[in-house]
Image (cartoon, rainbow, N blue to C red; front, side, top):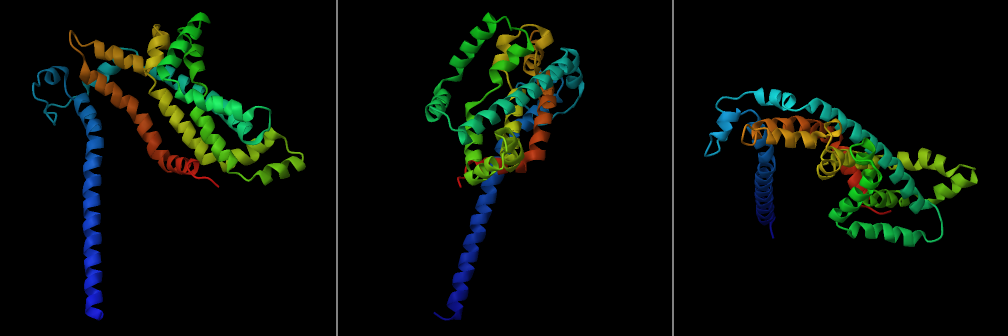
Amino acid sequence: MDRNDYEKIEKAAARRKRATRTVTYILLTVWALMVLFPFYWMVLSSIKSYSSYNSEYIPKFIAEYPTLQNYVDAFTTVPLGRYFTNTIVFTLVTTAVMLVVTVLAAFAFARLEFRGKNVVFAIFLSLMMIPNELVIITNFQTITKLGMRNTFAGLILPSVTSVFYIYLLKENFEQIPEELYKAAKVDGTSDLKYLLKVMIPICRPTLITVTILKVIECWNSYVWPRLITDDQAYFLVSNGIQEIRENGFGRENIPAMMAAVVVISVPLIVLFLIFRKKIMAGVSRGGTKG
């Protein structure tokens, strides 16, 4: 083969590479539009008036007369501000307690030696096979019998642990060389000090990921708050959205509900945009071994 033949092969390979890249970008663009369309529709519905939204027999993809009245109605129809405060308290306390329980449990399974450790961990993992509906029924009966309905304790207690997060942190802790632990024990370092000074700083990306995922889980919690609370003093934002939805003067007030959903979604979107790199780093770290 002469030089011209090599140049033709290189040009053909370059054309195939450009074609592949173009098709990939087109597919990614289409996929991004499909993913973002519900968010666009949510914002669009939130700026349509109640009358214009309900008069549209064929949905329109633009708002002819945009209004912010729905955002005012979202905070005046129900005490959404109070529900925001309740949700923040519920999210922060639940996440903090869950981190303490999860980190200590993961450290025990990863580094401590005790009789029946593997059996106990296998039982823990088997709990992931139980449908969530059965757990909710059991938790509801337990919290009711303990007289903790319509309390923050009743909202928080069933969510302070997670088998999956314990498993994820255990896998990360086990990636840290055991020689470090033995060396620390020789120097007289306690288990708690070793956990705080060595393991937690090394596994910080995974801990940040677990924290953010738990915050999102608590913020989006819907079924459990609806079951365990019927007192407005303990309602979360999920309860507030349902109230707004039902206050539609004979019909569902979808625009006001969408305005509330936009407001509620903003903190989570900002949180993800700020910590997206750490989330990806934590997930990828949890998926590697060694």
